[in-house]
Image 1: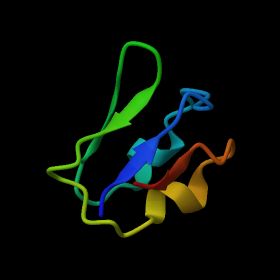
Image 2 (image 1 turned 30 degrees about the horizontal axis):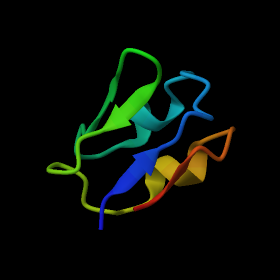
Image 3 (image 1 turned 180 degrees about the vertical axis):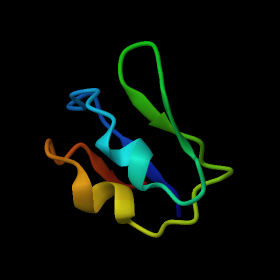
Length: 56
C-alpha cells in the first residue's frame, strides 16, 4: 500500500530527498507521492518533521 501526504505537510522537502524511487514531488499546496512509484518503504514518513506522511 502506498504512502500519502496530508495537508499537515510543511513543504520542507525532507521526504523527497529520502525517497529511493523518486516518487515524491512538490504539488500545488504541498508535496505529493506518486502511488505508482511508491514501494511503501516508509523512509519518507521516518524523516517528516510534521508527521504528515502515513500509509493509505
